[in-house]
Image (cartoon, rainbow, N blue to C red; front, side, top):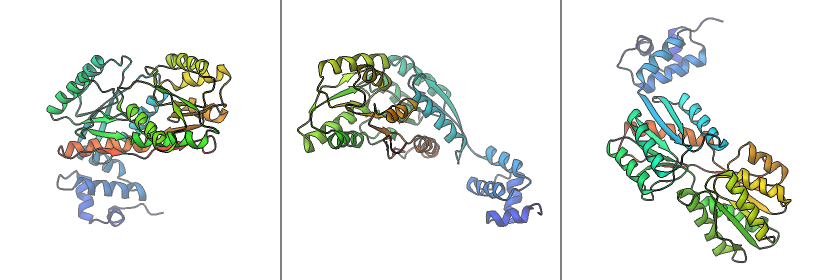
Length: 340
């Protein structure tokens, strides 16, 4: 086949030959969107000068460094989030996005605030998952006062909408979890609730929505007081063992925070796995296996590719337009053993 030439590329991109020549030469008077359209056409038709075009487009894009703070490295969910963000950054349009990802092992407010301030010094925007605390709030307000966009990821950090947020509608998550119990449990009864930390706004809203559903539509169920796992699997295992021993008539367990692997381990060791309805969060290797063996009934999950793309796109837009709020509520996914 004949090797595509400049006129072929111009036709494929829907631009003039002169525009293609300007893109190839790196001329400054070509809009970024036009450069990208020419690059896409070059990739599509196998244009011989693709490498040069890619270099010119990359040079013309703004370069942004995004600092990301996630929770502990050993937690599979946050490893999956980091991987999704890396993939989304590599595919970003409108800017070259470089990620600086940190995993916080010490989740204290003081350490979170210190690391956020340090990250902001080296980045053009930051994105973090954090509990709500006055020390953290003060640090974020300081960062925002310097003009840096701050994105709350997964868990909201502001109830007033003054901070960009990318994540789920957690009130709906809680209502949907309650619906699952009300419709799957064979008889009404007591439901245990595990929370990681009530200072995470997403978990607080999960519980609020959860309770509102039962109050409105299924009052015959009894919801026990939530027990904190402190985002730790070992703690979750211990409190689940205690809960199962104290309430042998338990019909359901709602795991709305960290430590689900520990809760599942306690269910299996007690012999109660598969006997009570269990709803938890996010599809990982652990929760996938638990769905398959029946110890977990329903998983409500973040759509990680969509979540990551919205973060990266939002950061690019926020850097270009500081006045616009880039909050994005993404739809959640629901998994059972029948659809994984």
